[in-house]
Structures are given as structure tokens and as C-alpha cells.
Image (cartoon, rainbow, N blue to C red; front, top):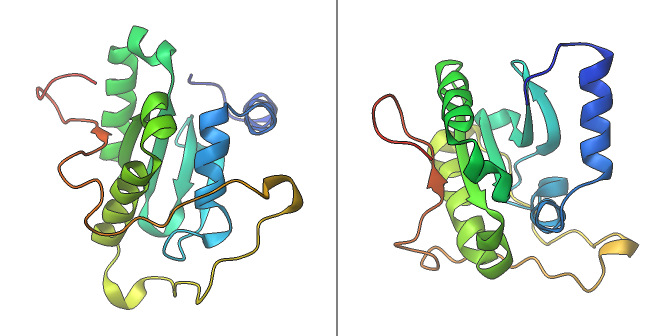
Length: 166
């Protein structure tokens, strides 16, 4: 939802961080603390007048976790994605059921996009070993995708002008 800049936007971002969906929490546990190829992600980041679910500054890359409400607003999402693309951002959208049932494929799609957007010499150094999970996240698993997993199944990538809707 597009909001005015300022305290309303900041409060909305804070509220969305506090009230993440289970799918957003699951995806965030895999993206936070440079856990995916060493890239830094932020959540519910205010970008160009919109809130992005997950944002990687180093790659100008936005990941959206879409629930059923997005099926009712494909025009809005398509316009939003066109706007982000015009600003130089890449946007990948995943349905919540994709995150629930095939997190490995979701992470593989995110990883592939990250690595394609950032040239090798400027990529962040990957962690030698995974960071320990905070107390509240123990027992949650965040698999590390292999390059072959998820092949042939891609994210719900937004399209440019005239190429269809989401």
C-alpha cells in the first residue's frame, strides 16, 4: 500500500515487522544476518514510496511474500513492480504456499537472482559457517539450496509492460 513519507510510513513499517506472517518469519530466518551468500537484507523497508517485504541494498533487489490478498490486486502489484523496475530494482514475488511447501526452491530463486545482479568482485564474502540461531529460532531449519534444486520452477517474477499480469 502506498503511504505518505514520514511518521505514518515509519509506524506502518514497524507494525509490519512486529506482525509478520508465518511465511515472512520463515523466509526472514533464512535471509537475516547475511545468511544467504553473505548478502544483507532488511525487512519492511520503505523504498520509493512503497514498503518492500525484504530488500537487499547491495543488489537493488526486493523479495515479496504474497498472501491471498494479492490475488485480488494484480493491477496494483504490476504497477508497483513496474515502478520499482523503472528505479532499477529487481522484484521477485513468491506465494505464501511456495514458501510453506518448497522453501528450497524459493531460496534457490532468490540466490540465483542475487548472484546474477552483483558482479563477482563486489559480492559480499560468504560466511565460512552459518551463524547460530537466536534463542527463539532454535529448531527452525533454513536449508541451503543446492544449485540443482528447484531448477525448472521459478519464482512468480513480475513482467514488464504488456507481458501479462501477476
